[in-house]
Structures are given as structure tokens and as C-alpha cells.
Length: 203
Image (cartoon, rainbow, N blue to C red; front, side):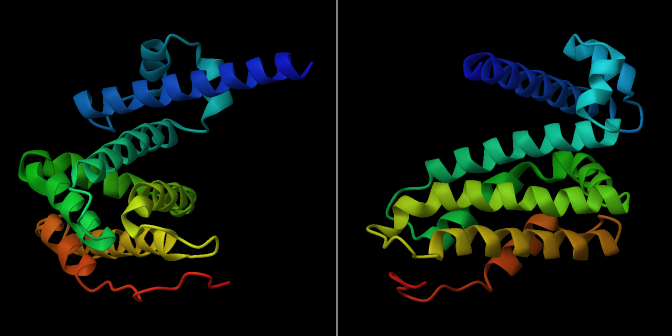
């Protein structure tokens, strides 16, 4: 029974991921407004009913797909930073790389930022998603600390502070309707971050 339940869970997760990936592809190609739930379902090879079993709205499907892709990208960029670079400096370097093509994709960045703040439900979901980002960044920078005690919070602190900096930068950027330099704002916020030298053993 456990094996059957596990297989079913894996299939449901795979279907949800396929829908989210399809939503992100279509949104990138046609924009969020022009993308419909029916188009996403067709692209993912599922029916409309299956789509709505996994996502309450097309907006949530699109946001999930875009966010999943972004997590994959930032973790990959962190892995490319030389290992001797400190955790916070590695995060700054990764976000500089992420912002390198900002001008060419400004509208896509704006669409995604506005989508995540388009309703109280979407904003709440976005804040929940930041926890996934924090954990992914923490796992990526953990080896840069060397030997860590079992209760050392610094890797997770790096993830949490980085996402707070990114969120505040996006909020400031949106006040001006996306006309400013988002990568510069992100770097400015990241540059304010500091860590204590060692908190190993902290509880």
C-alpha cells in the first residue's frame, strides 16, 4: 500500500510540475495576460479539470512555473562562483549574473513582479515561496562556511537576508512602475547585509 501511495504521490507531483512548466513557457512566449488556463492544460497534455485540481488559477500556475525556473537558475549561478568566495559575496555575484540580461527582459521581470502582487492570495503565496528560495540558497552556500556546528543558523540566515533584500528591492522598483534599474537596487540592498564571524553551536 505504501508503494502504491508513493507512486500516486510522485505522479501527482510530476503532473503539477508539468503544468507549471507549461504555464511558464507560454507566459514567456505570449505574456501572462494572453495565456489562458485552457492553453496551459493543452500544452501540458492534461484536461481542464486536471489543471484546476492542481492550480486554482492560471496566475498561480504561471507564478509557480516561473519561480521554479528562477530557483534552478540562481542555484546554478551560485555553483559557478569560485568556492573561495564568501557566502554573501557569492550571493551578490550570482545576482549580478542574474541581472546581466535585465534590459533585454525588463518587461518579463515586471510582469512577474506584478503578477506576484496582483492579489492578496498571490502575495501570500509569494511570501510562502520565499521560504523555498531561502532554503535553496542556504543549501547552495552551506559548503562555503567550512565545518558548521549542528545549530549554526548562518546558511539559512544568508538565504533569508538575501530574499528580504530582493523583495525590498522589487517593492522599491515597482513604486516607479519598473522604470528603474532593478539589478542595481538588488545589489544595493545585498551590500547592506553582514554576518557575524561565527555562531557555531548557537541554539
